Image (cartoon, rainbow, N blue to C red; front, side, top):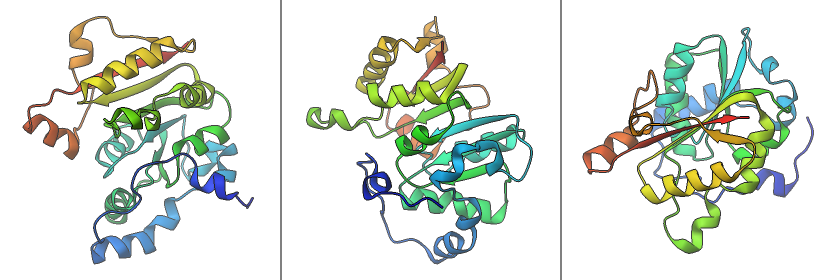
Length: 230
């Protein structure tokens, strides 16, 4: 395995990596089950080979939280290989606990900055990337930390195949506007939605997430954006 530099290990991830103390069951699941699913950067040169089952396409979810959407989609589409990216240990622990109970061969996990993985994937190897309820970094001085920015969009464009899909969901109007502005300005993407109902309606098969439920309960309105790789 190729050693990674200190910079590669860190990447550009700005959020917390650890929150509340993990429960014993989560700690045990991480020790017992995470090694089976965790991938190393040098292995992603052949992404289909990451999975023990045949897969017809590769999909990514960046910042999967507790894994509700990731694992639901992997069950719905067993012929798709799902790579879930989550540097936050507590979120990773929730997903791994589910996988400990109900293994899914078409799921693999990555626990570092998404940009590191996107830079290593073969060009045009991914059919779909999802960024769902990312940290909005609301303070103006922190906007540069938002994932949706030109350098990361360049990486997304490189990894996505022509016709591939980039999905973004958020309940923060400012970040929705920011994303529309940034992605539409990038020459590799086009916005595919034409009516208000298109971005007000959850994606087909959407299971919802705990964060989304809290947002709706607090009166915030989610927006679901879709872009295509041209």
